[in-house]
Image (cartoon, rainbow, N blue to C red; front, side):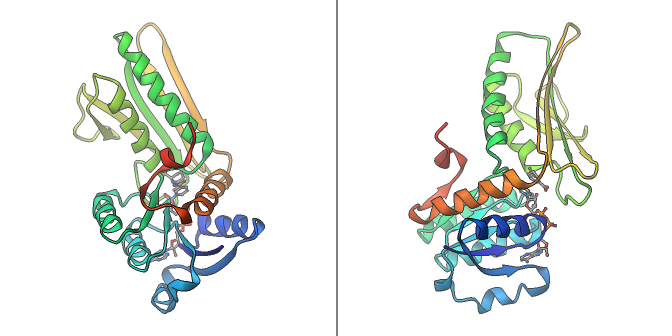
Amino acid sequence: MNILLLGYGKMGKIIGEIAESRGHSIAGKINIDNKEDLQKLDPKDVDVAIEFSQPEAAFENISWAINHGVPVVVGTTGWLDKKSEIEKMTLDKNGSFFYASNFSIGVNIFFKVNEFLSKLMNETTGYGVSIEEIHHTAKKDAPSGTAITLAEGIIKNLNSKNTWNLNGETPSSEESVEITSKRIDPAPGTHIIRYQSPIDDLEITHTAHSRQGFALGAVLVAEWIPEKKGVLSMDDFLSF
Ligand SMILES: NC(=O)c1ccc[n+]([C@@H]2O[C@H](COP(=O)([O-])OP(=O)(O)OC[C@H]3O[C@@H](n4cnc5c(N)ncnc54)[C@H](O)[C@@H]3O)[C@@H](O)[C@H]2O)c1
Ligand SMILES: O=C(O)C1=N[C@H](C(=O)O)CCC1
């Protein structure tokens, strides 16, 4: 396949290496300093675009792909206020748009464990729940997209919670899941869910040791997406 890399930073480079090692060609590498090149590209030369750029750039890049009939796999976080607009555009144009806050298979298992655990916690009282995420200091957004997905998983399943808050900011209330974001190098991504009570604590953790798992997941989805249409997610891709 010919894969266009929208964003060629830490993630784009690893994705490019993995894609080439799996026999794919790179149709283009778009970064902040050559972003005009995107308008010169012939979309017919692109089978799929993989978008790992920056929160401010994601909407324009994804729109380009959808408007030119190119399936797009998106890992950029911190732009979700515009996601519903992209979803509408996808449906209007009969396009293919895939977003995941985290492409690692391990994290997607962790998402399911988080949902199961929060369901179980309805059976008892006295526990507070919180999320801690730790990433490298170059990360532009907080909380991480993964922490937001984890909070949404808790809110969906734990009857006592209906919102989340970051680092003690409002809305902080009994109904809110507290998220703490820490920026410490070189952390590629650590997420901890804690249920704490005066009697005992329960804790589950996912620790990424490198960016390899995120990048491989994105390439696997790019190999899968060409046959698919619509607004897609890890629930469509994974069989669990
Ligand atoms: N979903 C996941 O599994 C996952 C995993 C890791 C990182 N991420 C996210 O992916 C994004 C990129 O992460 P990174 O570590 O590679 O960041 P990075 O800062 O290393 O790279 C981002 C790149 O985007 C480029 N860029 C800026 N404006 C652009 C534009 N208009 N068009 C194209 N490229 C542009 C920059 O030049 C830079 O090279 C972040 O939002 C991060 O949170 C997601
Ligand atoms: O390095 C990053 O930035 C990461 N971003 C994603 C997030 O915000 O959850 C996934 C983990 C790494």
